[in-house]
Structures are given as C-alpha cells and as structure tokens.
Amino acid sequence: MSFDFYDIVTDVFSFLNASTIDRVLYKTPFIPEFLNENISRAVAPDGRRILQPIWDLRIGREDFVASPLFPVILSVTFYFSLCTPFMICDLYGKNWRWIQKYKIQSTLDVTPAQCWDTLVLTFWNHVLYILPAACAQWVWTPPTPLPDLAPTLFDFVWHQFAALLIFDFQYYVWHWTHHKVRFLYKHVHAIHHRYHAPFVWVTQYLHPWELITVGFLTTTNTWFFNCHPITTWSYMIVSIIVSVEAHLGFDFPFTLNHLTYGFFGGAPKHDMHHLKPLTNYQPFFNHWDKMFDTFCPVMSAGGVKPPDLLEYERKVKETKKVR
Image 1 (tube, helix red, strand yellow):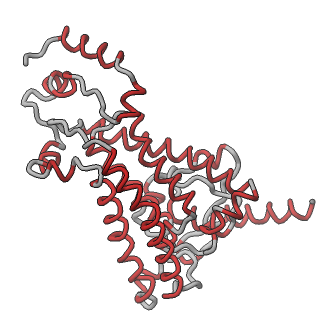
Image 2 (cartoon, one colour; image 1 turned 90 degrees about the vertical axis):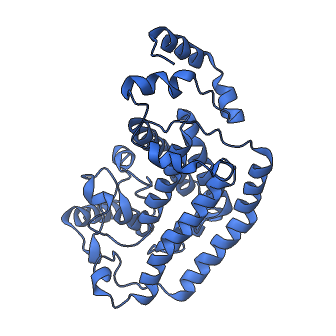
Image 3 (cartoon, helix red, strand yellow; image 1 turned 135 degrees about the horizontal axis):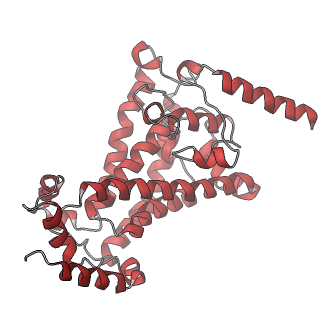
C-alpha cells in the first residue's frame, strides 16, 4: 500500500472513534491499518524496525505465544529463575567476600528455615490463586492478537516506563494506606514485614490480597496504552526485575539506584522501609516519597550510614523527645 496522507488522517479518526471501553473489556485492541503499514513506511522505507528480528521469533510458535497462559508461564518461570541464584549466594556464599561486601544489613544471615518459610507461602499462593486465575484466563480469554510488525523502539521503551510510573503511584497509595490503616496492616501487609532484613524470596512473601492487587495492577497498566504484545511481556519481566532487585538485600554498584542520580530507589531504599516501616512507601522511584515527606535516607553496602541518614535519625529522635 502506498504512503497516503489522506489514509493516515482517516485511520487516525477511526482509531479515536473506536470504543476505549470495548478495547479494555474485551482485550481485542483495534489495530488501525496505519499502525501496520503507513507509519512504518514513513519512518523506515524498507518496512523493518529494530525490534522486528526479535518479534519474528514468534513465527512458527504463534499458538503458544498467543495463548492466554503464555504471560503466566513467562512471568512465573522468570521469577523463580531470577531468584534462585541469589538464594544460593545467601545460603552458600556467606564466606564469599566478593559478594558479601555489598550486603546492606551485613550482620544478619539468611537461613534455610527462612528460605523454606518464604518459599512455602509463595508456593501455596501460586497454587491456590495464580493457578486458578491462569486456568480461568485460559478458558475465557481469547488468544492475544499478534500483529505482523514489531513496535517502534520509542513505543517499546516509553510504554514500559509510563506503565512503571503509573504502578509506582498506584502502589504508593496502596502501600501508604495499608500502613496507616491498622486493620489493613495487621491482617494484610504485616506478613510482608515479618522480615526486617529482606532477601530475595521476600519479594512475593505476601498476603493473597496483596499478591492479587499487585498482579492486577501490573497486568492492567499496559491496557492504558494499547501496548504491543512484546511490550507487555517485556514490561512484566522488567517489573519482576525491579521488584526482586528491591528485595535482594544487596547494594550492588551497577544497580539503577547508582545509575539514575537518586531517581530510582532500589534495594537500599526498600531495605530501609523494612527497618523503618513508616517511610519509603514508593516501590521503585523516589519522587512521591520526597514530595509527601515519607522519604528516609538509606544505608549503603556494609550497613554504612551516610551523613544524611544520621541527620534524619537525629531529627526523628529530637521530635520524639518534644512529644
């Protein structure tokens, strides 16, 4: 189809007139023709995109990747695969100086009993809640539409970043509420705070209500942008990575909290939340905590307290004396 400005305008208006509610409820997004042809020809005359070779890996496997079960299999498999090496480091690497020097709460060891406790709850949460939800999704959800073209690199990146920002705000509100409302904390969120020094399996050491809420928000945030399937799947992987990294208990020099000039919280920030539960509610970034005065400075590798944390603790202590 030749490039035609009139066709683009027509397709844009068709897209804007499509029912957003229908696209969300039935998850069968309207994919206007210009998304598949006209725009791709305008930005890349050969019709190829940077992510196209990766997206083409689906060819011959369409039935599998289009299945409603595929995102569940992908996320669960990736989560356990990512966590297992760090569990090995926690249990068998206590004398590995090359990694233990990055541990935040260096005086506290992770024990096999703790790993067993967190793994048992994680296992039963998956069996009793994730598995039935996946089966229902498999039965009642239609296959995922698989367009021919990959998303542009720009859309691939900004859709994921925007979804992370939205989830970050959603969970900040949820998290703040479940700490401030005593009933919700005692009966829901307190489970996650049984461990003051997080380790990798604490990531999904959650009450079922929290697990379901987090899963629902993570899944639905990509619907706001009518994301390409590969963008949605990548966003799920990225969400798992940043969530696991926040609970590692290690302050590695290559993690995002060191590379984003304070915009990203990372493991040190969430470690401090487990030590001081009325601070650092934001799961990924820092801006809402700083805006609403719930931010607490963090310890670095080896349990080192920087001057801003010492000053924060001094002010808190003085405030308590006044009261």
